[in-house]
Length: 229
Image (cartoon, rainbow, N blue to C red; front, side, top):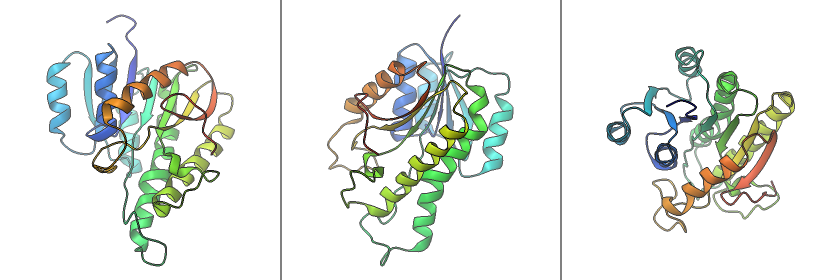
């Protein structure tokens, strides 16, 4: 389709990343969706949107894998790059009781790897395009609630890394979004979460589209409300 916008969703095999890919496809976008391994959900979605969905393999925690993705997409234009990566380990544990490797895994997956992926893939997004990362209100230091403190720390680290990224690339014209989708009923969010995927993701996409072309870093929720990080 001439003039069709393209979204690259890194981490789209399930959960909120999959829902983002499905939502953009339903709005007539072309979507490049990544998964670490085979995803039956994405394969089924590709059968529904054979001309609009492209599936690419990548392991976001492996820098060489992300670089290989960048090479495969060389010369392509991406209007929205969205990084969806997150794990929660020992979510109710404190630093006294948690295992160090679980915390390190969360810091790698939730903070370091997403921002490294932004650095490696940013040139696919032209000036005026959008780069977004899934964050969480729990990552706010100003509004710390005390819940899931190790997970929240990894999201706070993500926010700070993106603050540094924005300062380094202040003149590239990208809209940079750290998005809090709310507490959503997913495998990670759990069955007690307040929101369904259908209550969160369409508004997240509305918010992303509302910020297209607005350069600079913003911390926002799904209603496009600024958050006090």
